[in-house]
Length: 368
Picture (cartoon, helix red, strand yellow):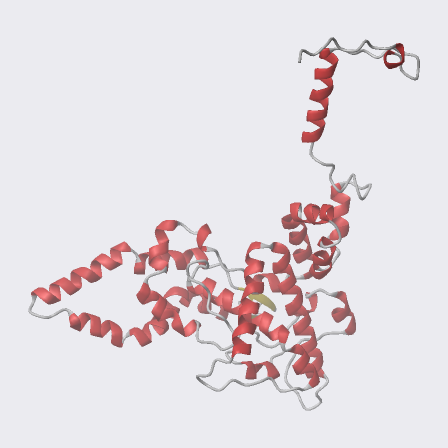
């Protein structure tokens, strides 16, 4: 069927309500479509000019006074708020940590991820013999071992992972410690399901902190709460005459760790068992009190130095040297098993050798 001519345009369609003539042409139609397409691709207005008539700088300065838990709840209010907080998450969390957790942040640092490490060092970090020697840092009932394929296993990062998992587990048992309810003890060699589920959930929280600065700040907030509750609990015990941090009611209500800058007891010992939670008041590793300077000294970041040591000790050059030694032993009439037996017999002492070799400088610096 052949279409007929278009219907004529009437005067009512050509004349607008204000009396002006409406231009109808292919050119104006194309221009209208281009404007509609351009408007559809235009990014939405930011929350600073949408929900709140404030500039981003002023809005961020207001949000910086909130606790990390409040910011996480604020993310759940609406999609625009969540997108805005995620866009400015790094800047916002940096300000929150500097304002509230200046002491906790250098004590509880994040371990490095394997994807951020030079791939040429991965074989040395994942060396089977080295992983077996690091087992002394993994055999805890309340800490899930770090996944070596995802998290760096240099000594510095392993200790950081253990500390973060510990503070999450310590926070979980605060209600028991406040009420005096005994913490369930696990017999040696037993692996109850409830404990496996608990340490797995704790590890998930730490893994979130590795990729989300806001969740990392949340872990610091939880540990500050655990520390204040422990100090308050032990201060109420009249029979406990041990030295502790001076914490006033204002310090506890401020939500900051400023009072932890005062002189106090050593806070380095790792609670290797949940039974240590009863007498634990403050766990702030990687720092020591200097009586000469009368202030706390924090451990420097030895991650890069540990990676350099691992690369030299377990790298390709080291493996080649071991193979040459075994070949020489075989050529001299041996079977080559002597070298392997010596290594296996000394495998139990590898952790003791690795600790002073990798991080002996850490202990000496802290003692100063």
